[in-house]
Image 1: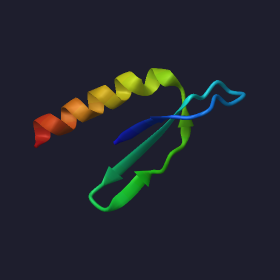
Image 2: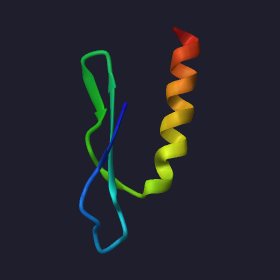
Image 3: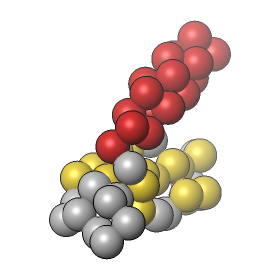
Image 4: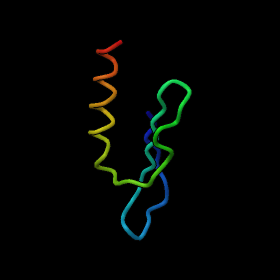
Length: 51
C-alpha cells in the first residue's frame, strides 16, 4: 500500500493511494484526502498481523 503526496485539486485531494495485492494493482493512484492516512495505518497493521 502506498500513500503519496500530490498537488492539491479543486476538491481538496492532496494524496494518491495505491494498493497492490501480489502482482496485481487493485487500486491505482486515485486522488484522496489527507485524512485517509489513518486508513493506511489500519490496513498496514492488519496485514502485518496476518503475516
